[in-house]
Length: 146
Image (cartoon, rainbow, N blue to C red):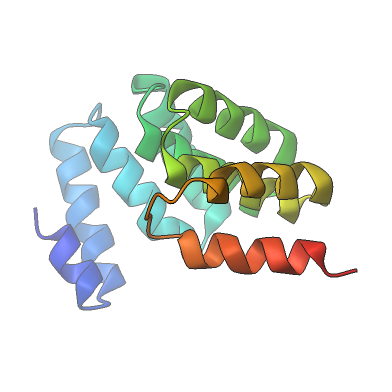
């Protein structure tokens, strides 16, 4: 599939077209649905939400799908549903630092500063390297600032 290549080249329209073609060929492919939701979510989270929800119905335990779905739910104001999904993902993969960061970030986004800070402190207490570590450190500093 060329969608990843197009994304790297910032040709989002081509990526969407490629994913839509792949979806026509296999409408029950959760990965394609998820990728299409992610691509569409960059410009139209409301339209993308339908694809993310379909992907989640097909593969509710897939962390990448949960992440996309929760992100789009947050973007469209369905914060409680998004938090429930992220908490589910964290219970499913408690040692996954990216999942833990996504939960803490979402908590901060909805104003649950104390809970977010607690999650970030637990996450950063370990010396695990993960892609969002700097973001997590910055968010914790921000949350500690009155």
